[in-house]
Amino acid sequence: MNVNGLEFPDDLLYAAEHNLWLREEPDGSVTLGLTAYGCALYGQIFAFTPKRDNAHIECDRSFGVVEFAKAASSARSPLAGIMLASNHNVVRNPALINKDCYASGWLIRIKPDDWPATQARLLSGQAAAEAFAERMRLDDYNPQDDGVQALRGNPH
Image 1: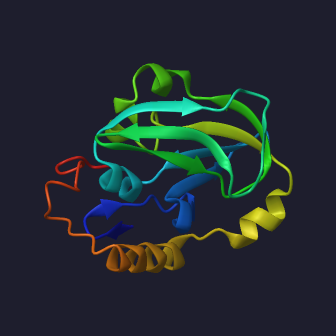
Image 2: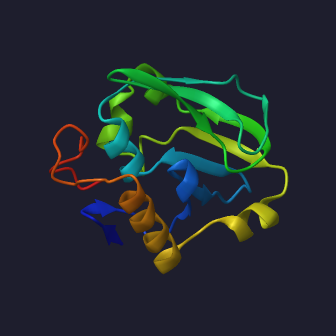
Image 3: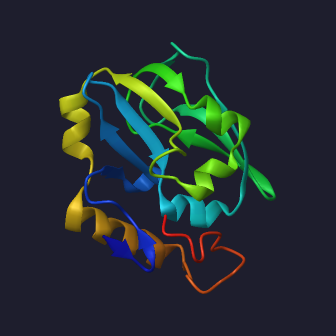
């Protein structure tokens, strides 16, 4: 789906309030990454510093820090669980987040404490599109603003 020129793949789940996408893996773990809207808001990302592997992450608590042009932001998890791994390629080359946020630019994998309860709170399809459209409206997001939009011409 496309919202204001930004792509949100239909096969993912979304936590709009965290600007994150989630994908359940065959082994029951969940991969998290920053959405195209999160990338557009941050602009060029200069660093991702994750918590250590095997740390227990609480819901709405930080799993790492994302550094961008003039600030840093705590990346907060929409679910509780054990952090299985961070994306070491992104730690070494954070530009992957902006280049391919839905594939090679993923951030962490987590073993959820209660995936069914979390899944029930996540959005997909039209509900996700509406939630992101509303966030963009509330944020006064302007897809034509070069100061905000770091993804112009990028399909992700």
